[in-house]
Length: 257
Image (cartoon, rainbow, N blue to C red; front, side):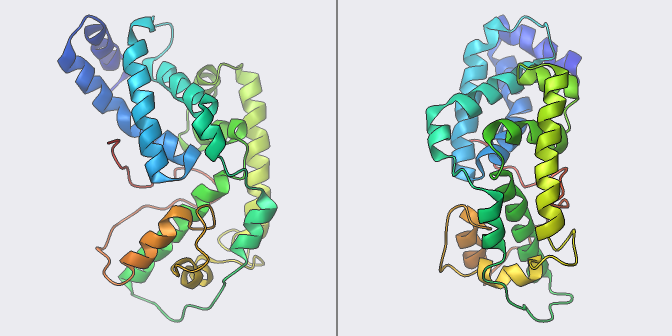
């Protein structure tokens, strides 16, 4: 749906049209959840945050004055909540890249020959998704959000700056600093980027699928248990995985409850 169509829904919703308001929420809820999931990592936390953000969007809708695209305004409401809400700050694990590198290099094991094994490929995709998303937690909230908006969700820099209430130049600086940290880390620690890296998805999978040493924000974080439960009876879930060096992580969307 283009900006003009969304603006039409917003005007109707501001005028009291409940059907338009419901449709508007349906249009934006996936984007809100994706942003929350990449910021918070845990699907349950992301679902709760998305709920709160959508409520804020609805309750503040009358204040939107069409001075920007509606999605820009929506991202600003979401960004303010994700960075400002105390419960989000309290749950931030404040990981460092050094700590995460140590976790990546633990529990490595050869996984054998799985050529043509569809289930194994799905589990590898789970590891890649989780690794990429957990890596984002090593950035502080400000730089994580800039990186997600700029390089993952691919917002225009002017739009992303407006969403963060900073100038376009300042957004570019934040994004550049975040990119530098992520690229430096992956170039040394990710087997998809460097042949010299100790960790590779195949070597990490055996340890990631074991429930022992489960830690919420380790490599597979909250999906470690899910991997373990699924490993005996996987449904063949298909996922498009991006390179951990950055762009278009297309994790499946769980609609806010």
